[in-house]
Amino acid sequence: MKIYQAVLFFIWFTFIIAIPPYSFEKYGHANLIINDFWLVFGFLSGLTLLVVVSILVVRQMYPGMFSEAFMGATGFKILACLIFIVVFMKNNTVDKHVFVGDFFYIYFLNTAFEVYILLRTLRHKNLR
Image (cartoon, rainbow, N blue to C red; front, side, top):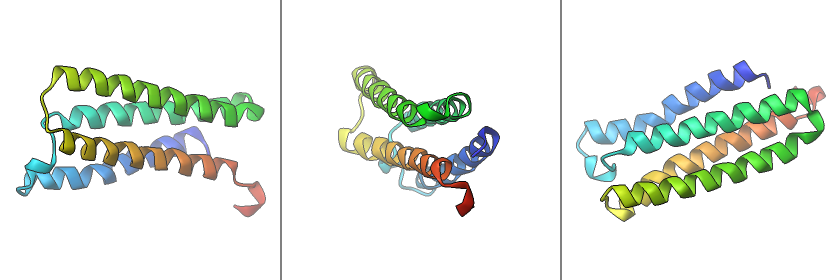
């Protein structure tokens, strides 16, 4: 997969996963969304974009290092998310259960996107 295709697909994907939280806020279920949800959403989406682009750049420059780059970038993402959680929870008072639900909604969907890019990139060219 080319970098520009992945970025365009990521923008489309991010728009799609932003629809349910926006709908909850707009149509009366704001108690399911934390106050700074869009900050968390922007951080995780930006981090995912950084990971995907870096993985694809490594794929173009060093094809044999793709798997290592994916594992390293995923490890970096996990550590960055843990640091973000600690700082966010220290500076904000939120309902912890709602925060966990909101955070993992974004985190797992973005991780699924990364895995999709991985599978799509590693697919053999004859199967396309």
